[in-house]
Every structure is written in C-alpha cells, then in structure tokens.
Image 1 (cartoon, helix red, strand yellow):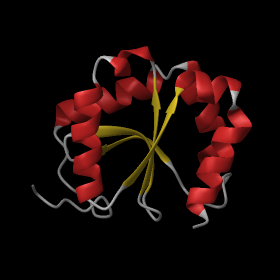
Image 2: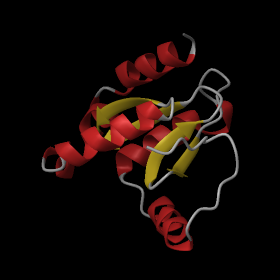
Image 3: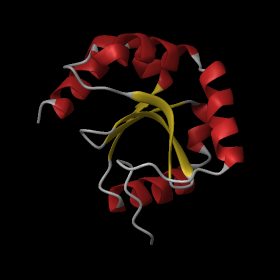
Image 4: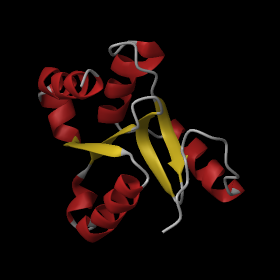
Length: 123
C-alpha cells in the first residue's frame, strides 16, 4: 500500500473534491450536531476538518495534529462492513486512528460520545 501523509498537501482528484464539497452540504443531523460541538477548536483545542479526503477515502471528521478520524455511521454501514474494515485498515496503515459511532449514539448519547473523543484527544 502507498503511504500518503495526510499532513502534506496532495493532489486530490477533482471528482473526489467535488464529492466532499457536496457531502458537506448534505450532512445528516448527527454529523451537524458533532460538527457544531467540535468545530473551531471547541474540543480540547483540537482542529477538526469535515469531509476530509485521505487517499481514496473521505473522512467524516479529521484532526491532522492528532491523526484522529471520527466516523458517524448510519444504517447503510451494516451492509458495508467489509468496505469499512478495508478503509479502517488503510487508514491505520497511514497512522490514522478511527473512532466510529452510530448516528443514533451521537444524537441520543451525545455526552458519552464527546467523552470518548475528548479522552482520545488527550491521550
């Protein structure tokens, strides 16, 4: 596998950039809530980006300095567990840790999700 550093600018295909932009406009409620809570360094001073491309994948939220990705999954992820496993393996190979939560966890257990994220940032 190629080793792409998410710290440095890389040539991102135009179609992937356009798709990431479109995803930013159509964020589900759970993603909108998390973005509101972590944007502008609100979470332990960590800067997160949303819908950030890394390699051939787009991460829901990504903190470059902590090499931490946060993924919020809806029901469709039940059918794509193999894809998610391959994706997580690729990201791990790039030195990126992935935290995954279900959308309903974010909406119904917001404080617990934030505690997990906060603890990971401060490790």
